[in-house]
Image (tube, rainbow, N blue to C red):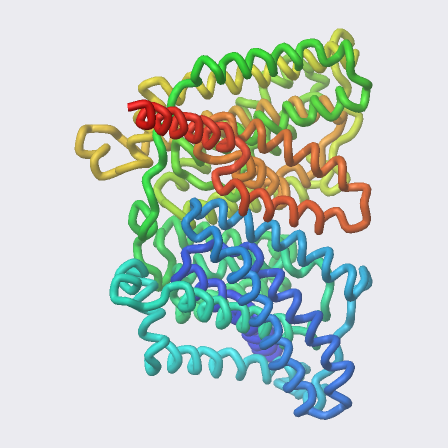
Length: 623
């Protein structure tokens, strides 16, 4: 028993090695550029694939050939990271930070299909490291020699990073930029090349992490999204920008996962998110992190939200009129797609309600969409509840979930708040995924039928249109009510809002409740539109879809989520039948971010601003 515990402990340390490498790179990039880089997992994946190709040609059964391949793969990934930074991110550093996140998500999609085209869909098994291809006996238990090598590598890399950041001029500049990057620029340092060099180091570490895990896990097309969630957890638990904190957090997460396999196998899906939730509730800025201010350095205040202009009201009236007559002119498929677009528009608008006016980014908003969906579905399947009552219960169930989760989340801010929402969402997803007797597990709940009067597609279309329209309009009214102004005041300056007597935390909590309930309405309607529900509806990809819709449409406009949901859903449906549809979708997202950094909803604002400038120029010329 002692031998098993010791070996399991060492296995946890080995698993922490590659996790530390990718987390350290992510932490370095965020510390300087303030970019939450979704594409960091793609760099990790590329490290594994490139290392596989190089080991097939260079290793030739020799130890030095294997390690040269690993280092060379990391270097190639670092160059790819530099190309991404120069060609894309450097062009949008002045854009809102969340749009930079959207651009990196586009990179994720492009890299996925590029890897599919180059290496194919089959999982690749990595070669064993020459000289480290056997196991050693420890108290009667066998431990792979390569695990011992990994245990040695991570503290060596930590030591080298410490020397790099504390004993070199470049490292001192990077640490200074982490504290105040505007001041570094004011001192005459070239920020552009500093950012590029930081991206090189961060991408190198990600590529190295993917390359060294090749003999243990191989290379496949899913490791990018799987590892990025774990990397975010490690970075947040350790403290944003702290490499030592990332090292300690990687060990903590590695050990928890290693021993969870022995003690409680059912918890392996969620153990790291539970750990992150506990750490953030006790210490909101992580183990070795520092409290973050209201805004990142240099972040501009949000523009003032204004009621719709007469021209905008006319455009909305025309759109509503088109939607009302659509069943008379559209085919069944178009009507079905429009139903999905309208439902997802409500889902995106509910997320925007806390992201835009509230300034609270959520990485786990699908939890409330899923809670509403499962609330309605379980009532229908277990109690034979009529559709009308099930739809009324959906926002109640989702709102209760938002009330509980939001109580903890509103105590945090920035990335820490976003990651805590992700933790709660993953906890809810794991319950739904594993509670087979009640929720159906991964098989989901099927056979959910609509009430006879709403069984007709056109009738249901009008029901969805009315319910979602009223919900979206209600949120818009709340934004321009005293409640909305109080929430926006807390977003723009919490200190001033507190000084005039606004209980910002309470208003944020209520905003969470409203957003969760509205997402629950969307979830309940989605169940009856599909006739089934699966755990995917509250998983990370669904939350990412919501983020993409909001960011694509524009956080700084109230109409943005609606346009974003329509554009994203329509584009995804149009190209999903193609072989490399992710490449096209990712490239389109990147192009839109570069062309319209304020989102699709901001195009109209840009046009109006251009018209005003031209009018002003004409008046001046007339004088």
